[in-house]
Image (cartoon, rainbow, N blue to C red; front, top):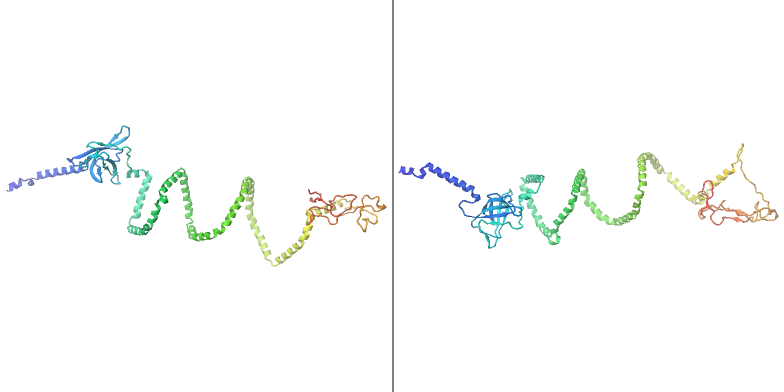
Length: 479
């Protein structure tokens, strides 16, 4: 019995080892070819023409309705008759899948974000089918789908590096903050509850929300030609905000006091509307004057240039004026000044009518100039002893009507035989001549009248006799 037991298979180590090696080889073979279909299993083989291989490799899954129904056996490039490139993909499908209807479509889809792909079969409904070994032609107008790796490949390297840093920093920000996130999500519930009606109103047709992003796109297209200027703008804004950071405390105080200022403005600005309208009218009237400034600008520039030097020197003058102003202040504070000024005011008030009457005698008629000029002429002759006064004596007989002495009537021509030799014995007298004083005509009557012979003239002559405006006494007639 022992000899019979030792001659069995279990008692032969070599045979057992050989069987184990064979099983291992079969298992490895089956595992290696599992992605390409199990051997000796009948399949339904077709070829698919695609616009692009899209990263497919041998062994990628083929799915229908989300279930694995086969594998990719081969991916080959293909040149179409029009010269464009395409791809031919050999598919090994399960026998039960075939035959596929003629309106079946095939797409390449991503299986994971790491780039793994699979072939998705969307089964049609036509009665005509593709027999095994057929080629599913490329659908006219079919395009290569945009995959997630295409999306990430559209960014350049600096952008991809920046996105990588953002993900790292975002991961670090959320690490260890699960409790805070839970609390934040819990606190978001009231916001979501109250935000739902607002969001519903936002997407309502009346709001025109569908036109918002096209409008943004149009605005971006219009801003594209000035992108460089926009970049310079933000660079300048960086400098501006950097400057503001140095006065952040003042800005904070301004913002804190802003509501009070706005309340005051709400209350006061309506009252200032009239002032604003008047200011607008004022500036409207200023427009002609501002237009004239362009013509006057050369002269103004010279004046400003000269005035700059004067203004620099005025600071020194202001320093010297301090003492003067202090003395004036002390003078104004003296109790004797006010009574004296009151008396001066009263004196000036009393003298005003007299001065108003006498002033034209000099300003219009130049009486002082005439007097001193005639006095100088009268004393112009002199000898070694001194100056001489020139004068003449008019001697008339003492008769009735004569101006030589007291008379009852003004002289008005010859009076008797004693005056027969006198050509003119008519009185010419103006005791109250016009001197352009208040109430009088603007003329200087005295010594400016036309002397008429044979006519008695008493008082002011009719018409304007002119003004004595020259300091030498030269008479100038007014028009």
